[in-house]
Image: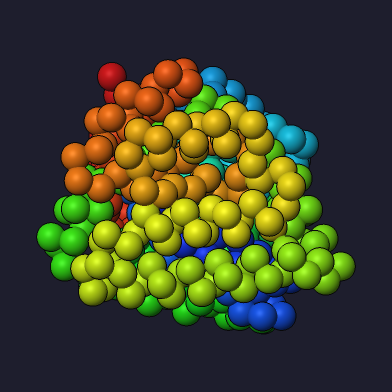
Length: 347
């Protein structure tokens, strides 16, 4: 018996950063994002032994521990162990060995919400195994609580909710961890055009998002006027993006992205760098009408809107920087779990 799950990664289209405390607590945040056909995967396989094995297949990392109710948080596969520790504490898992395996379809630190999405996927695998009666809001908040409180990792709130709910969503964030997910009913022809025109480009660099997020948080705490005003503008950008998508004004998307990118750079100095600026300039010169850096910034994926038939010219310009264009589809389904009867120990 193997208990499996997968949760989709996401691209943020507008409002990025306004889901991070203390801004969201004080002013309220708003983000528009869409999930992709790129996933975080998790599976739990009972072994019949006495050990707990945790492994990240995409990173060739594995840790083995004698069965225990709590595994050490020591910088090695902490997301996997952190979820296990919390599930064990809240629901209890019988003392029997198992193997928890994960892999993600995008590199860590790439700006598509990989860490939070992985936590959601791991929770999903344990839900499948233990038959836990958790709803979508419960799962997303649970993942957020494990990351931010149990593991003390910096970050916002959007990734957990995007991974759990799936689809194109307008999300609102308030104090006391209140989140409202508004699924957008966008006409399929608009989604088709959005997919066709949005190029997802991996810069072949990663970044430590916690450093950027802490700078952003500090700017809010110190009432940095330029930074806080930029976040206000990004919140408004998310509403502009929502209206453009719902009304089919796709010709406005590039300009909305471009406006947001200029505002986002004011939130923290480390959000951009010379390479990112050069890539952005080259993409616009090749025909992109706007774009953005994914996630906290500093590296990872960038997204560009390429109207008309400019997509291939933009891709040609981007590839000169040594990165990779990633193929994807916008998916409407969030966290998915299932059980397979296949038993590797009988083969």
